[in-house]
Length: 142
Ligand code: RB5
Image (cartoon, rainbow, N blue to C red):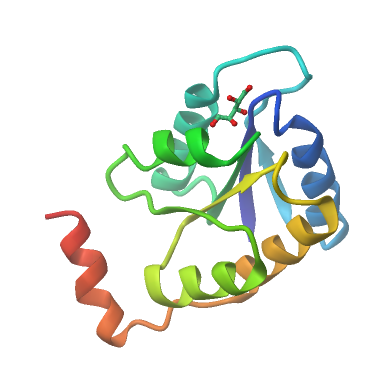
């Protein structure tokens, strides 16, 4: 499995924690930045991670900003991207099962590091259920 990571300055610290967590599990990481706490604009990272997922360079993306809101709004402008902002692991499980989310968004100023790692694990360990959810997802793109 390969995961594309992206964050603005507000999410940089949590991105580094998630990167090390994934690498310890043997999961390959494609780090699209940012690479410091210098102020940057979150849409840049939404675009980089959305394109990595859409081009099949990564199986899933994880995007982090202060709240997770701006970075998920920007990612969802890309056709085929379903970015889900999750604040607990039940949301992460359900968004994979029901929405087939392909990007997990997190708010580093809203969600503690330990909880964020639980959310990441639940997201990556859960499969799409298909069935009644399939036509609803197809309808998003119409
Ligand atoms: C940056 O200060 C902050 O606006 C950003 O990280 C995010 O919370 C936007 O939605």
